[in-house]
Image (cartoon, rainbow, N blue to C red; front, side, top):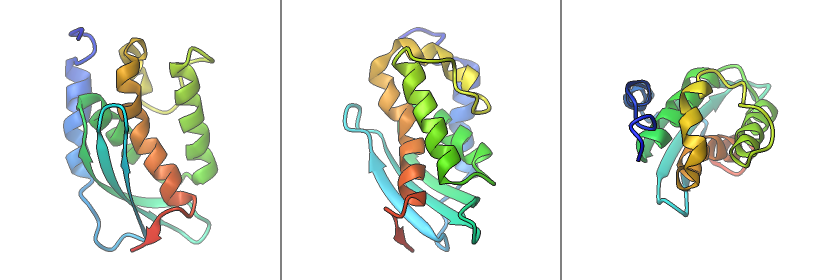
Length: 142
C-alpha cells in the first residue's frame, strides 16, 4: 500500500474513533460487516423526535481507513437525518465508482487516495451503511 494511503492525517482520524465509545443508552444499535474485507462496526445512534442524529457511539474493527471514515461520520452526523446520511453514502459510493465529484462530507478530502484501492471501499462505506440502517428503521431499539 502506498504511504499516501495511510498517512498521518488518516492515522490521526483513525484513533479519533475512540472519542465515540459505545452508548448503552442509545435509541438504536446496529451491527454491520463489510463482506469483502471483514471490517465490522457496532453503531449506536440517538435521535430527536424529528429523526435527526443527536449522538453516536461505536465500536469499530476495521483498517485505519474504516476507522477514519467512522470518525468522520461521528463528528459530522449530528443534526443530520437519514435522507442526508443516505445522500452522503450515495455520493461516496458514486465517487468511488468514478461517478461525480468528491463528496462534500467534511474531511472526506483526506480519504481521496483510497479511491484507487477498491478493496478498501467497503471499510470506508461501512459506517455510512450502518448509519443508514440504524436511521432507516432496520436497527432494533436498544
